Image 1 (cartoon, helix red, strand yellow):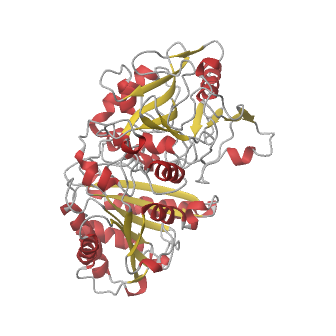
Image 2 (cartoon, rainbow, N blue to C red):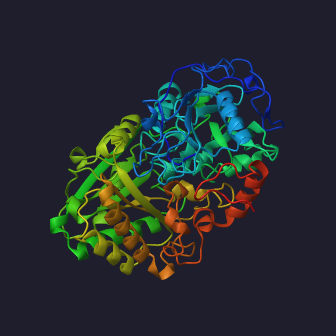
Image 3 (tube, rainbow, N blue to C red):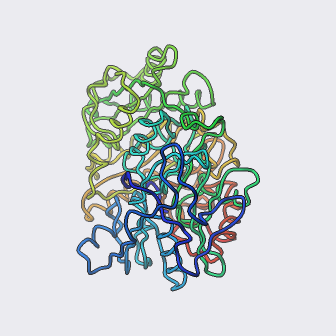
Length: 567
């Protein structure tokens, strides 16, 4: 499954039975249920599990006019030439395509929406792209006592359905068009992370199509129940990355502390209202001293507030350090408005971050990274939670522009950036050989409830960080690839030059985010630390992930440039 993917929500009836697939496709048995036969229709308003797909599996080949649209994702650096794209609508159809590929020895990759940052879905070695973007149902499954979300469902559509109908949510990502498929498998974090943890902290079960050593495709539902024989497969999907073990078709969500049987009690409830604050500083007035103070203040505050609990669990903030050609740097903050004294807490946070920055703040009037202009939030504005989720997820043209190229790098920080690292950021953000308002470093809040879970409890290992960095650049033309990729590499490798060009797992940094996949981490010319990408992404959890790989994908049929390697 590619990382950070998207699709659109449908209101259709769900799923064909896996049993409808012909001979050669099997269904796993055991306490971790499989889709073996159509069960009774779901209660509580949800669809039946075996009532048939909305359309038959569709095959698109190079001769079809729509082929060019189906062989590329959001990042226009990557376009494939597969012999076919299969658009499917049920686990039964997925099972049939996976079985066909296994029998024929075809290389198969999976798209749920297309936000993968590298070429793991669209590349020259792929024969079949399995497109799940039309598998978008979201419903209450009374039989499991959990909410089912198909792999192609986009995050904003998931939020809309869960909140409008049941008043609950999952603490997943902010970008509206990211799909559940790869986002969840990679750990999935978002605006409610400090308050409610990661989306995988609420994952109850996952449905996966795998292929055994004999080449037989199977549909298995793995749950977090202690007695489930497939529990390791569930664990692997709590941060083990996409495209590693099989094809995810559905997730089920139920918070671990949920009690009772009512849907409205099965997941966390978002705050009824939030405060949004957006301020910025003009680059033409920003001195290196002010930049240093601002960046240092942000890190100091987060390092001091990284522990779970406390009055600032409901705060999430982004310090957007844009390249000088952009014209501004910005600070966006969301605060749970239902917390006692929320307005004062937000004011105290803003005072701490801006303390000693002797450049006046101004309204945030330009799009920055994933965020649109927000001058109306210069004075913190109170708004309903769902309105805020829509506003933050959809107001930037970058997120809806299907023509952009991009490159990305990441790091987790337990401690603040050093003054030398901040000086490096300044050095590269003011370089004149790059003229791109879409180039930036984004510092994001972390910690809080994320750090309340042990590093081995889920496959997601980054459980003691204070904030996260995303180094990114967007641009239009292939002619600008070299300057943008080179700029990112220079800045990233110099920022972490003391540890071989990458943020190793030590007392200050904590590796990289697998959903911001970066193929350079496997290049010894770029990563000179001696610490490989498996450790940077997964830390001490990697050997267990390899054992799961051996158990469920012994033939290494689901593989890409940074897939889990067999032991």
